[in-house]
Image (cartoon, rainbow, N blue to C red):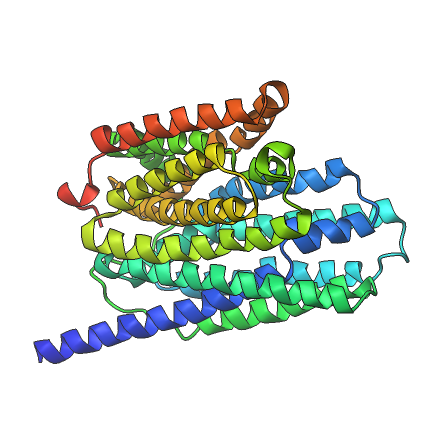
Amino acid sequence: MNASGGTNHSSAVRRNMILFIIGEALWGFQAGLVGSATVLSVMLQECGASKTMIGAIGGIEAFGFLLPQLIGLFLFGTGKAQKRRILWWHFVGIIPWLYVIGVLGMNVGHVRPRLLALGILGCYGLFIMGIGVVAGVWMDWIGHLFPRSWRGRVMGASWGASSAAGIIGSLVAGQVLRHFHSSSAYGWLFISAGCIAALSITTFWWVKEIDVGVTWEERRTNVGDVLRAAVMSLRHVGFRMFVVGRVMAAAGFSIVPLIAVYYVGSAGGNVTKSELVSAGAMLGLGFAVGNVVGGYLGDRYGHRLGIVVGVITQLMTLVMLLTTQGVWSCAVVYGLAGTSQGLTNLAHSNLLFETCPHDRRLVHITFGNIILGACVSPLPLVAGWVAQRHGMKVVMLLSIVCSVAALLWLVSMVREPRRQVAHE
């Protein structure tokens, strides 16, 4: 009976894992169809948007994703009804904005350009905020669905599939825009993305709630509970050490948005824009590889190892960036950068789970993401300012110094949570 129960339990976990991989792959494909750095930016240019408006996309993504996570603490609650609330929110608060942007995109050339650009940018901001509301709760849901021995592989495989599908989506979008010169092509891409996103979320309705050793408790979240849990999180030494190391590592890799600027210049080998775009696909491929490898390493040896390997890969990226040039160098650097980000992001999510010192894990996840996001978001702007004033070489050297410091900190100061008392 026990053996049969164990087999059934493993079968249910595998089934949920497959559904997560399919659902995330579909979501990644739709995201690739309407990438903010490609399709959205070009569509805004077609509308006559200024560089400042296009540059605002990064700020919208950074802050629109983080701050609304506080709303999710109170909106979705806890317990078995959480799944239903999470999935319905996608259909009500997230996916509709893709359709609205699609309709606006079909009116390029027919509506006042600045007004249209502001409308598209505003709707994109609401789309990102909708994702931000559910982001922390979604991670908490994953923690309830999968045991710790499976969680890394599930996240690695599903996020890797999402990244790989995103590359395909980007290639499809490029072909659509290349062959259909009408401005309405942008609108159809967003409407198609909305349909695929709806299919993605529908996939998650088939996920079954199973007993993975976590107690589901129906209870309301109030401000006092949130504040008390946040203070407990901040007092936890393991959490503080992890946050410091994570911020140091991010400071060492805030140069990523400037890689393109370096390679199209003479110092990087005067790589053409078309070559740069092709080489940039390696970023997504590397991210997929990093997620899969990080999931395996984390489940087998602990996620502290994943983030350490991620920072080592980060150092390799920076050294190659500093010492080589040309299109092949560009492709390898993007591949290494994606691998590092995949390893680090997956380890980050799991270490947030495992450094939680209380039973309010959703508060801990949200609080950790907001602290890290607030510290990390301004760093690319600082890196850009330093590059503008002192040149790319100085930024690269400073990044290497920060990365070495982060590696030493993670190795010497951050303990593997699985060797301590588990709070799961």
